[in-house]
Length: 88
Ligand SMILES: [Mg+2]
Image (cartoon, rainbow, N blue to C red; front, side, top):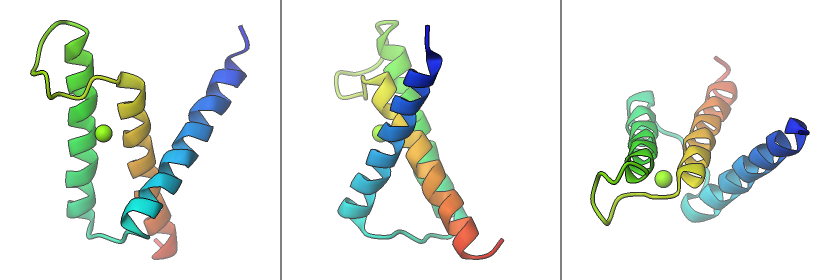
């Protein structure tokens, strides 16, 4: 199996999600505690999607594990971008 194809798809999907976030919210800059809340909320949606596979949770919970993982990665990328912009 050529895992590089899967890695490239994941990276492309993360980049597409970053573009979607910028279109939706504009370029974001937050204090790190705010970023941590945003990232943790997305991690919570990963947990919801994993719970769905076990029959747990509520109907309104996130259910697409792959998409929620992409959200987590894209938020982490956005935070990392800010770290670089601020010259950390
Ligand atoms: Mg999400």
